[in-house]
Image (cartoon, rainbow, N blue to C red; front, top):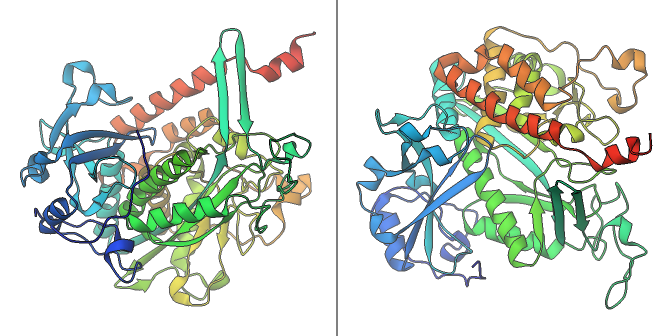
Length: 504
């Protein structure tokens, strides 16, 4: 059972590799997040009286999995030989006839879990094939690591930075069912606009965001400030540096917490940890968090705008003298993303629910255009005070899939644009949400359904296979796995169909 845990005092301890501690307790400056050597992991185990080791990984759907061992597995051999597990039980991976796989923990990812009742060390793992002890081709983290290797091999840049902004809803509770004679979902949110006339024990205070009215109100209209602050403090505790938190546009508890950018694999690791932290902080406070892109109709959905840049030798390669201070290389990067956007959608918008967000009218960035500060374009060039911070912001992704696949797909498309000098065309500074039809049809758009995105991925995959980053085996397996969701959704009878057709 998850319980509140007291802050632990800081000491260090016995084995060897990098990890983020409960730094807010351990260091006078909580912005310093030191890496842990294997020896420091050992010392942490001793000082914190660690009892268990939680090994975690991410499957092809972007869902985090875990298995827990007694602390006595923490031997040097663990970081060389790993631990065996049954890969046939993970959707899209091995068959029962070749089910053995290896979890190899990365000590650089270790942190002290803030929720378990017993002191537990968490580490993210790579998945290896035991026959070769090489990275499993369908491991999302392994794919992301190969993408970073490929980036360096090109000589274009030595670092790719990503700054995702995942939005999410905090509900009081949620109920849903999809039975043969019963299908529904019901959201409970005291701050939801539809509760202005509801009766509550103790009275209805009347303070709640209207539909599309949730951006930046102070409490008591923003009823979730303290809960977000608790989330921020817990993120800092496990080594994720935060920058901002606020209520988002939608009613019923839409929020955002901004964290500092990082390199591809590190930021993807942090994104999974962030989801875990937010869900569990909400859970121990009697609420529930969802990263569904469109959990309800009639208000804005949740996106995950992804800020990106490339650097070499510490120099920002996206800074230049072109539009909005971008370099020509940055424009080519945008051009590559636009060219391959439909294939990217299979990862960046990986659920059937994703495309309920990507519709006109709800601040959804469906138009493949770029512009300075224009939030209606799918690619925005944020204003920055220093050229060192120059970057692009891709606005069509959502937080459903893992960052390993979303970030990799974006970067591989951008690199293809650079290699082939794919220019995105002129910028578009118009309000793209209100274009006349004759202008709108001239601008390409993102996919409108998951099956369309999967079909595009099937046809446009070579840019992802460059450098052996993704393989046909992975792409075919991913398409098959996600098509199961498409088929299941298509076969389901929807309550709206009763409204439209029952009396015909």
